[in-house]
Length: 147
Image (tube, rainbow, N blue to C red; front, side, top):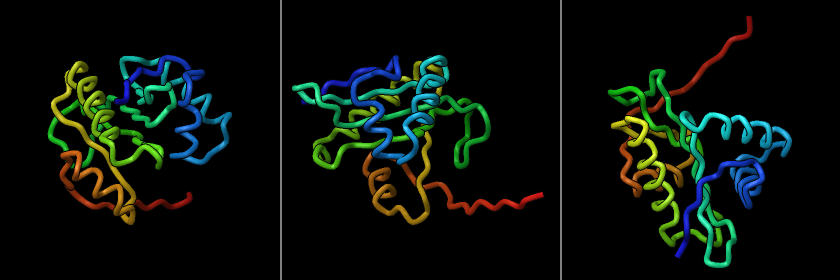
């Protein structure tokens, strides 16, 4: 059975490795962002699932969003910024445990809704969200233009 622990420091065992698996970027950039997240515990929360032998198995990062969040009807909203479970640990209910902890945190912050997003072509993520009780609210394509 996995245990869930909050991340309160960028040095938290497994946090950087799980983040890099989800978002392959420069570790220095991750560490800077992780420090910023830890410095704002009323706005961001991070949790890691650990195995019985203290191996990091999964990660959830949740934020409190007060700006408009597509498909929601309230504010603030708990927003799943990132959810990742190591491939060797999938299909064991770890993502569900992590999301449950994120939802609890969001409720404690006064939220009545959770939201998330996924790339339009990431059908595995769509299926995971549906399995976790999320409902699709809309599809959006973003545009930009240099000035």
